[in-house]
Amino acid sequence: MADLYLAPMEEITGYVFRNALSRHFGSVDRFYTPFISPDNRIMKTRAGRELLPDNNRGLNVIPQLLTNSAELFNEAADLIADMGYDEININFGCPSNTVAAKFKGSGILRDPDLMDRFLDGVFNGKDSILRRYPSFRISVKTRVGYNDTSDLPRAVEVLNRYPICELIVHPRIKKDIYSGMPRMEAFDYAVANFKAPVSYNGDIRSCTDYERISEKYRENITGIMIGRAAVVDPGIFRLIRTQTATTKKELYDFLQDIYETYKNDYSPENALSKMKEVWTYTSGLISDEKERAAVIKSIIKSKNESQYKDAVTVAFSRLPKIVENL
Ligand SMILES: Cc1cc2nc3c(=O)[nH]c(=O)nc-3n(C[C@H](O)[C@H](O)[C@H](O)COP(=O)(O)O)c2cc1C
Image (cartoon, rainbow, N blue to C red; front, top):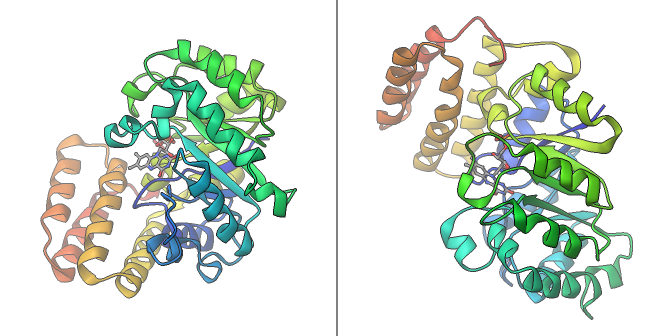
């Protein structure tokens, strides 16, 4: 059975979310941090809070870095390894225009020579983390192309030159962003041609979706990563593992828990805006389109805690009793 991974989602699946998910529902084998852009102030910025061992006790967390500079990667990897982490995931998938224009994230897929130089510095450079920690693991999360899937064979050829421990593939190209049909032929190409384990990510929204991929690829994939559907229903991993659906009360307690921690660790304003972001996903549980639009509108409009709580009460009255998977 494929392992279950919580996807990195900027501003959403950080330490507050993953700790609460683990406490309330469990069943996640690996948690990936939202991307961290390394600079030499890495520990002084909010990335520090994200990685602090105290904020990640008992969780299997893999920090993700977004950069195309081996020097910055190696500096950050030193700090990360010293904090006790044993793996870093490299982001070769971010589709944002500002990121990709700088040949980072998915942008590096259009320059395989740059990818090669970067990975050479990461694995073989004089400051490579592997010189200090030879068993340190480096994995990659990627898309199946920049302009089209014809970029993939060259990327796989470059990736295969390095001892990357795992390739997590989201089978979309840059311009797909997160929509359209996953390009499964390109995923098959990655599975057949990448020499280390491959994991799948994209549009897993139910037990049936999980089983379809798990059965199709069996021992050919290591893990299945879930992003958006885990924000809609953080109990999806438990549902897949134990067939236990999330109850309304569990979902309420989970959302309340993350809100309280956000208020405590950030500010009331930030906490509110983070909850609004989460609710853009949670509201997906309401099947009636009009009701869903009304619920999300009143949550987004709330200006303070009391208005937010009133809007949440209404939202919960519209949610199904047992949160069946979509
Ligand atoms: C709001 C948002 C933020 C994301 N942030 C990251 C990120 O920091 N790093 C990353 O590798 N992928 C990021 N992703 C992509 C997800 O990890 C995942 O690949 C994508 O959502 C597809 O999986 P899903 O269909 O299960 O959601 C983000 C996606 C969304 C929607």
